Length: 302
Ligand code: NAP
Image (cartoon, rainbow, N blue to C red; front, side):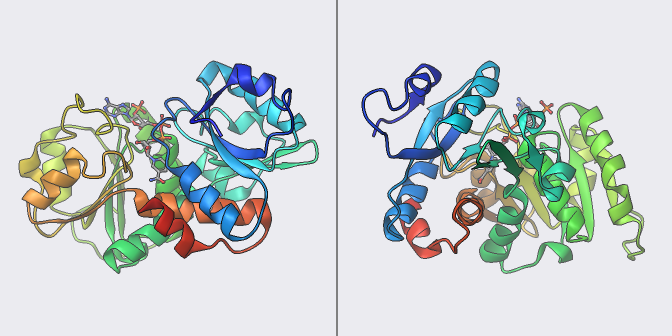
């Protein structure tokens, strides 16, 4: 199996004999993805012959890539950056939670149909429970990157869990404001929280974040900022405090700048590996209709 495949290679799939790769992840960039090692360990463990590959597919190649897997007897595909929202209109059907979150990360090929799902939100829910031994519904959450595919899925999960409070932050503020309007019905119930609103979209500036973080339990980074060494800090480290839990959906590097800042402030922190594990296990269950070998997948990631 190659490290990663291109669209050109997908166009010539099976030209040199039938490939066992019938699952994979489409992304750009995709080289960092740990999904293949996790999913291939699971496939081997349960005795399935299919294998899972990485596919370097750019945004403009997505439609052709999906069309190809539809006719190549693929079981399914995961979608990562930048495809999660763009793939939605390319599906034959989309399940209700994925439609509501406006993003998909899992495609099941069923005959000629492409069925879209989102396991990021439920994966995040399991991750928070295992990392911090708390339930999302009891938390005041501040979400950075609320306008992206992962951010929208996480926000929707917070809404479905009816978490105590949700603050949406995004570089492009309008996207966070639009999402807040969509989620408003989930936060209509009364909960006594003092002077702060239960659901808010706020500008990404120091003053606003300083105020919001004082009324937050869990900070989530769902942006791609922190993946590259040259990335600037998301916000000044001095805004972090020991009462916070910090979850960075990024898992490469293992210790992101945000997590280093959290440790420096005495706050609890965890990277996105646990979310990757749980969303991957749920994707496996969608593709094969059977329980995923979670321990095997966890061991493969570690
Ligand atoms: P996406 O749809 O492209 O969204 C990217 C998000 O990042 C948007 O909110 C975007 O804001 C924001 N952003 C990008 N560059 C920024 C910058 N320089 N400053 C501030 N905000 C910036 O990507 P995605 O698929 O949601 O992925 C986002 C992150 O989640 C990635 O790091 C990915 O690795 C991670 N993720 C992890 C898991 C896991 O299992 N651990 C699962 C899914 C995703 P605008 O709206 O303003 O463009």
